[in-house]
Amino acid sequence: MSAFRRLLAAALLVAAPVHSQDAARTDAGAMAAKIEQVRAAVEHPRAPNAPPLRTTFTDREMNAYLAVEGPSFLPDGIAAPRFAAGAGGRVTARALVDLNTVRLAPPGGFLNPLAVLSGAVEVVATGTIAADKGQGTAHFESGTIGGIPVPRTIVEQLLRFYTRTKERPQGFGLDSPFELPAGIRSVVVDAGRVTVTQ
Image 1 (cartoon, rainbow, N blue to C red):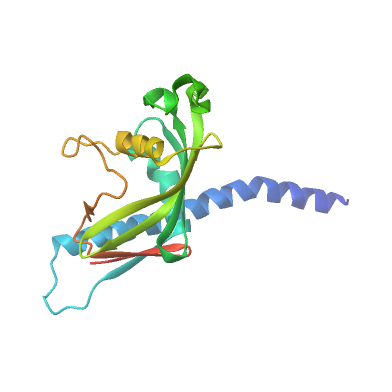
Image 2 (image 1 turned 90 degrees about the vertical axis):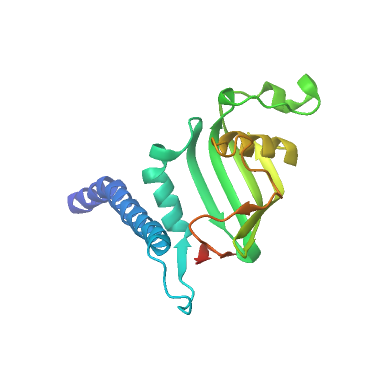
């Protein structure tokens, strides 16, 4: 390899992470601007006969936003979250979850392989989201913790633990309807994108 090619290869290796970080910040900024647009629609009501306002978030924007801004608002014990939208309302969410921050009660007690898991492990959940007329519902399909398939009850324990608020101390449950925020009337999940309608 010539000296020029070695220099070029070295430059690309150094520049690639910077470019990737810049791209992530650009995508995160686009996501933040869209979130602000959704909020502004609530603060500045439109005429009753105005057409619906639709905002589309791509997987790339959402994941960049989670990577860049996530540490400022995600609960303790959750890291490296990723989201993938699929056709027909299917979503897959994954993150590193610190099991030491939440008490799981795996069925089968110590005979269950989950009983020996601790520390940060990857949690993956797949399901569908249906949202219309201002109400949404999440339906569970499958989940794994540390690569071990787990029943719905375990995933729901994690969901409830990490979505607790003062107003909702029990957190969100699977298959339980919840009110959509920011005046959102419906949500359509398609391959690589999520579109909300206000």
